[in-house]
Amino acid sequence: MQIKSASNRTKQGLQRFMIGAFAALAFIAIEAGISEIAFTRDVLCRQEVLSLRWGISGDMVCHSEGVNVLLNVLARGPIGVLHPQIPVGFAWLIIGITYSLVGGICAQIKPYRAIAVFFGLHVFVTLIATAIGFLARYIV
Image (cartoon, rainbow, N blue to C red; front, side, top):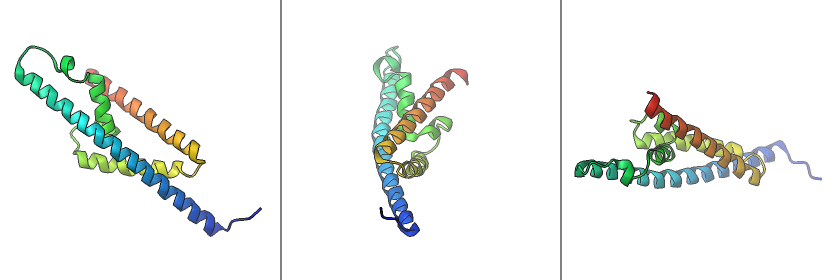
């Protein structure tokens, strides 16, 4: 059994952190980009339905309210629910930094567990933020 020195363990931990951080950043950037495109298309759809004056709501033609809130959360992160008027670039910066840190921390455990923990946390935060955003439309 070989004993690793402290500097090797530190170097290996930093390498794992960087790999986890970059993998999480890549995942979030792709997810946020695709969600932002879908969210923008939904907003444009709703504007077009309102301009046609057919007497139908945007929910009948475009995405439902729940999907609209989910797309907003995926595109702008939980910060987009708390502050809807936040610029997209700033929201992406915040979620990029946050999820990179979470990915780097998760990378310190075994790889298959790290992926499961990261996606589990992501799904949990997304569902909670979506529920808060959906309920906030009716409560506030």
